[in-house]
Image (cartoon, rainbow, N blue to C red):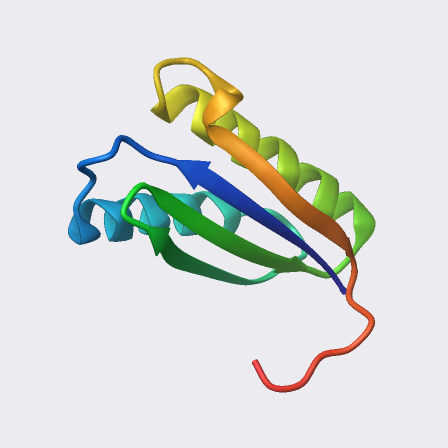
Length: 97
C-alpha cells in the first residue's frame, strides 16, 4: 500500500461547510482511480485542507498525485500553486481503517 498527503491552501474566509464540500469533491474524483483504497480530508486551519489518500500500488499513487494537482489547478484560479505535497510513499506500518 502507498499513501500521499497533500495540503490545499484556500481563501481566508472559507467556511467549514465549503471545506467539507471541497473535500467531498476530491474524494469523489480520487475514488474513481483503480487501486484506490481510502481518502481522509481534514480542515487543517481556517484556510487549509489536508488530505490523505491510500492506494494499492505505486502506479495508483502517481495517478492520485496527478489528479490532486489537476483538481487544484481547475478549482483554484487555474493555478496549482495552492497545493502543497507533504509526503508520499510506501506504507510501512498501518493498523485499522
